Length: 129
Image (cartoon, rainbow, N blue to C red):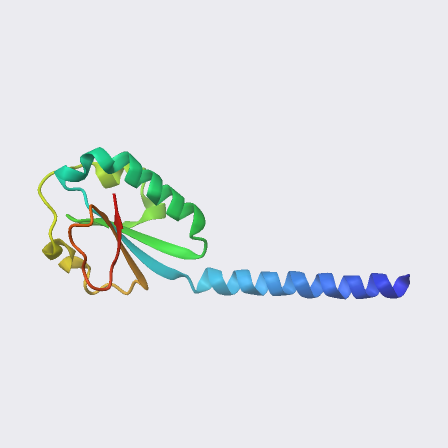
């Protein structure tokens, strides 16, 4: 019986150590997601649906840093925004691919555009609403 307890204790110790090391590594080596939201006037009826999509992404993106911007401006880290409503504070104009030029120098591993799907820029994952 004592042998079983020793083996179980070693197994438990190895498991906790591996989990802790993985957590530390992933916490220090987060990947970046650039999320750009189309806030043109035509998208205004979809703002609540887009906000829910962003909340879902945030909830399932552990160990990832989400940088948020709109077709008009870079807002910064999603976790530092006081409210997600800030993303949707203005709705005017029309979005085109030139609006994404401000994001060309980003170091993000993954670029996501929330829009109506009318433009499909290279290197971007487009989520249509």
